[in-house]
Amino acid sequence: MARSRRGRARGGKGLARANRLSVRKLHERALRAVGALALIAIGTSLSYWLAPLQEVRSNSAVQEDKRHREEQVPPVRVENVRMHLAVRSHSSNLIYPASAGTLALGQEEERLGPEEVLIGPPMQIGDANDLYRTYESIQFAVVGQKSEEVQIVDIRSQTLERREPPQGTLFLTIAEGGWSEVKSLFLDLDNEQTPARTVINGSTEPILGNDYFFDVNTATVALGERIEFAVVVSTANCNCAFELVVKLNDGQEIVVNDGGHPWRVSSYARNYAVAYNLVPDYGPAGVRTIRCDWPLGCT
Figure 1 (cartoon, rainbow, N blue to C red):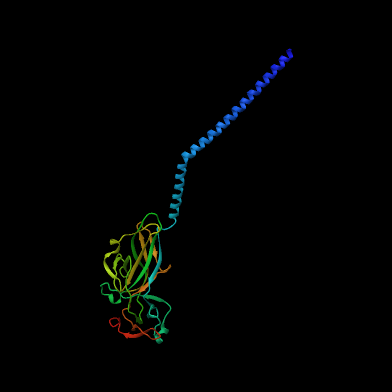
Figure 2: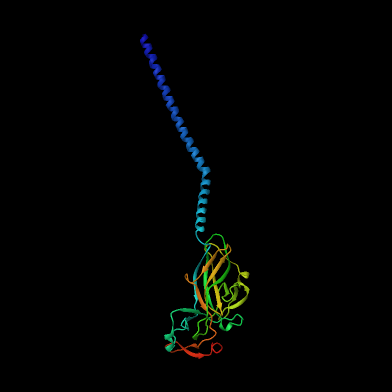
């Protein structure tokens, strides 16, 4: 009987110990579950509160990347650069028009040389040298490459070389067509200290205005915006090689040239050995020559 009681006592103690272990395990499991739920709740709360901060950081990164990319490019670019060619001359002292078709020059054709110099149409600005003054129009577009507006504050010429105008035999054409340009300005290669002047649209040639161009015009471009310019470049005294310089409000300067080479234009010479007017003709050559007395007898 005593042994039976001791066995039952030992059995009861074992059962109690097993129950305590089960309760402890359940308690641990409950704690782990509560901890997991707490972590989920904390993570959700952090995500809720940190999401706007992450969005701000993301937007800041985008803006920083955009700013970095903008810093790698100039404020503007120049494109669609071209010169309106009117008359060409050669260093062999033979001058002929580019747009006159096939020239009936006879034996004079053998005297053509390889180097071309641009001779533009005549232009009057009201000075003593107007008889010999010519002009050419250089046209280009300025395109903005920054988010902020960029202002163009000046356009000027920069002469690299001055020669005497070519002499010899002159073949002269009469200027045709009209003049209609947007944002047109005038630069005198014989007086580069004078700022760009305004140009009034004339019927056959540009007419010099009274104002300095950038005193009465504001030229600004932002990202993707563009402004078209036509720069009337004139000379009465030289065969000039030059470039154009576009100055921005931050002091930067953009050089506009002929594909990496300077532009070249020339005035008429004071004297020619022989001068001819070229007039339209219905014959095979398309034109015929009429001798004239330079300068007053030629038109």
